[in-house]
Image (cartoon, rainbow, N blue to C red; front, side, top):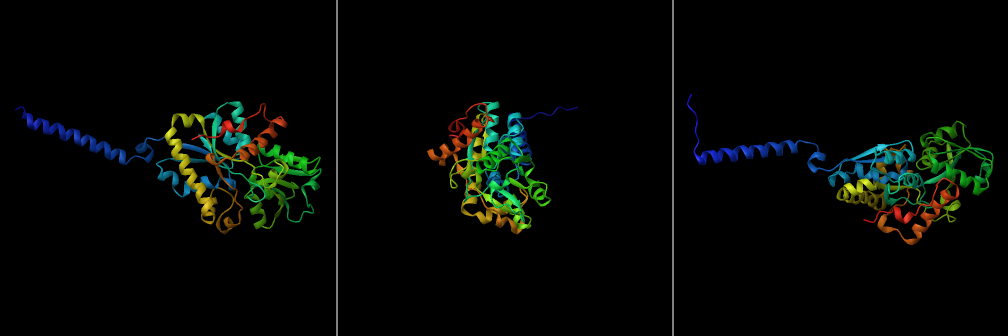
Length: 337
């Protein structure tokens, strides 16, 4: 058999063709691969629970802000804020969405110092409503003080229970019993007469009001009874990233926070448009989304000394109640950019 021979010029051309073909094939393979492979960025696993305060996160996911930043964000739903924190501790979540209890996060910080950094909070009060006490629509109860000896539901987790008990105590409702219930069961439990009242978070109050089964007894209770001023900012929920994720992927973390900030800006500037994104993440959807009161939002670079002071007062309550084994310094937990 005759052996084929190539001139030096032909051989060089052949080699270039093979090399070029390989690059094209590889490029085609990458182009057809998932975006996460093309961008070489890790998936960002964010825990949330179905409360209205998580709206900026829901909006950033659904409006495509994260995708536009080249990020793959996985929204992971949990029954309560405590489960979000536990997932972060176990390495099953890289962060939390707004609405995740800041007190729950602090417990994770005590268990594993340096666990996370907060880059946004959702301060609420009597104007920007998140927290509230509900009673059945026809209940004769007119004030929290009248819940003496009554059975009161709270959301799951140590933050909700501690706050519910403290508000009841400071409002004069001695002897009340607090029981933990998933937030999605609060309205049904009130309607069925299983509990006399509930310390809960929006959109629960809106759900009960719209289906004509419950009414708001008092809103903005944490600012009033815990912080001492109905208009004080209660930084009860926080969006955070684990310190490990920030250190491993600093640029990805910056892109994520910037895209998340777009979600906050949408809520601030176009709340009616943003409200639509409550659907699928909370118990509210359709025209009912227009009825939900919205919390305020504060980014890490917007904190004033007074905000840090009120945030610290909130954390110090948990030291006073023996929930925290040590004092947590809020300023150390804030993301610095």
